[in-house]
Image (tube, one colour):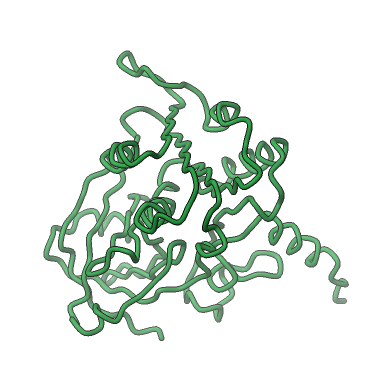
Length: 277
């Protein structure tokens, strides 16, 4: 389970100065045909001499043949990935993790709230929803630091044409920016009132997630109707090494997708444990 499969970079899309989306296919054609995953899961990506890193799917299983992973340039491995041209080989193993509950979300109105690279795993969900046609209204609130940092602009335009209500905001404006200025939570009042069937999916920096969840709770969403993703430093991806523990959970196997209800219960369970002396 620790042996990666070889994949080739077929195409590279530059999303902004720090994010690239890689279209990948396994070199083993039969493995590619049988490969399956779900929105919210991730792959362990490896480059020789640079180690591994978990990267969420940015593509949807409704569009088989290739997979897409969006990578933000941050450390040694991601910097090395950003230097690779199309045609290069990398290692992939997975998929790992608990996905978004797509069957349970069918028929629901969906409110997506994303910040930065956090739109990548939600991109997988939005594409899945549009392709299946089994979901209610779809609203996307997306925050970026500056207008130049807005990623997935081509996707956002396609989603708008498909009926998705996309609302963008930036922390720092520019002379040609005509949209909202402020953190992503400043867009939430525009979504009121929420329907009784609304479920919110949140992904982004941890500080953003904390504030968004608090606002959504004040807006009346139930804990089980607020779903987010958690990040930790992962090594094995299969719950063995313990690097990604969070209270009584392992992010790689119990997550990375959690409802607010699950997170609250996990913290309560952890705090109730007796102290070992």
